[in-house]
Length: 139
Image (cartoon, one colour):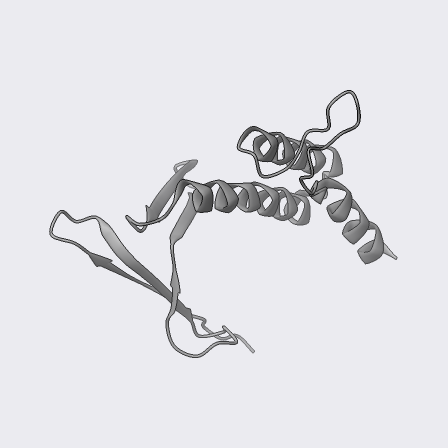
């Protein structure tokens, strides 16, 4: 039995056409009604043209810290999605490692110094978490 699911995006714009609020809702979502978000990336693959169409939006009051965290999480999500689609663990791990490098560069995760000190910052090791998740799902 087939069915149709719907995803709806609503973007409020200011007088300069800059997003002030972004809402999304989906027919298959657990929450009912629109949910506000600060940023979004929608990427659509055109297999015939072999190109991507993308919509990247963020509300004008989105902070740099929020964008850093958003991109950090998006990179790791892309690694997980890539693995699910290709089962290529090596490339997925490479994307996760890039995400950790990005996180270190923008100050989200700590790159431990040679002395072993992490300056009190909690290190988020999503590479290991993803590998653990994959190994559990294979069993």
